[in-house]
Amino acid sequence: MIVAIDGPAGSGKSTTARRVADRLGWLYLDTGAMYRAVGLAFRERGLPVTDQAAVDLVPALDVRLDPGPAGTRVALDGADVTDRIRTAEAAADASRVSALAPVRAAMVALQRRVASGYQAAHADGGVVVEGRDIGTVVFPDADVKFFLVADLDARARRRLADGPDAAPAALETVRADLAARDLRDESRAIAPLRAAADAVTLDTTALTIDQQVEHVLDAVRRARASSA
Ligand code: DC
Image (tube, rainbow, N blue to C red; front, top):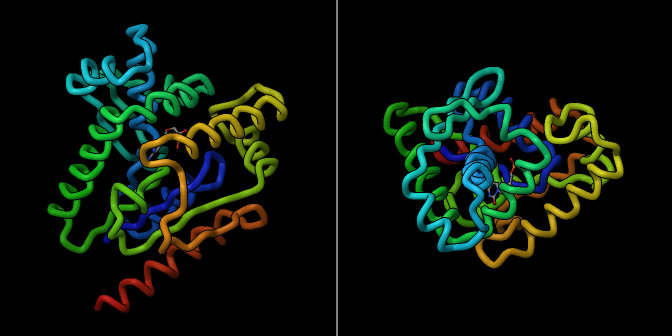
């Protein structure tokens, strides 16, 4: 079973997706971490954000995710970059490179490979995938699809409270960063951030994490019951 959780930054998707995967004993796949690793590779090499640079760079990159209870460890060409991809700069870089067609093609292929490899090895297992285009492009046939949203202020406050992206920035800066990133992610030509027609939109502004997790787990239970 594939559970797709999309939404803008700070909408609660990472925490929800990770906890749902933990509760079910399934794989958690953080696709944003992949785009962050690619963004870091562009920055380290001083490359322009162009299709040509992506065509030259991306096939040679080795991006690996190792999900664990404390979050996903990310390796780029064998080096652990987990902390380096969690800065505000890395988030903005990820958003820029993720608009490039060759980057998206490679990452979507990688995401599908990781999910099918896991499912092949875990007959009864599932994958909880979070991102921006999971329900629309990567897994349009996902069994369960959620699109999480929340007020910009609530998202900015969450980022400040627990967000490795922002601290110690001021609320105003975080809010502006999130708004700029949303706009870029929503307005790109390829696989823009948007809800799939068959996704359940969940406004998490006034929800606790436990409530968000329960919404998704309920949907998983229903999907399992109807496919049994
Ligand atoms: O989820 P995140 O904040 O780690 O994602 C960082 C950026 O990567 C996000 O601003 C847009 C891009 N991204 C994407 O284009 N598609 C995805 N499936 C996941 C992330």
